[in-house]
Image (cartoon, rainbow, N blue to C red):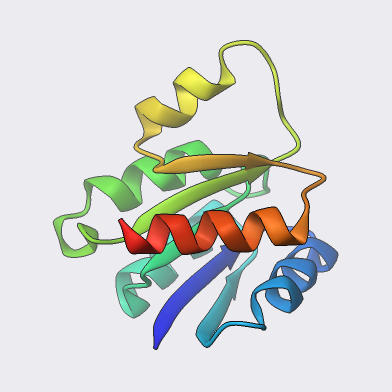
Length: 122
C-alpha cells in the first residue's frame, strides 16, 4: 500500500484531497505546515507528498519540498505542488524546488486522481 502525505493548512482542502483519493488504496497522512510536512516525511517516508505552498510556520511549501527532495532517505518520494498560486514564473520555482509536478486549485477530482496515478507510476 502506498503512503500519501497531504500538506495544507486548510482542513477543508486536506479533507477534499483525502476523499478524492479514497477511491484508491492509499495510507493517507496529513500535515498542516511545511515544518510538520518535513518531520512527517522523514518519519513516515511517504511515496507521495501533495504540498500546498502558502502555509504558516517557519518554512513554506517550496522550502519544505526542497528539504524533502534533498534528503537522501526520501530519494523515492514524489512531490506534487497543489496551490492556488498561479503567477508568471511559478512553474519555474516549482521545478527548482524539486517538485515532480504541480496542480492548481480549484482542481478537478478526476484530474487529481489521474495526476497521482501518473506520478506514482514513474
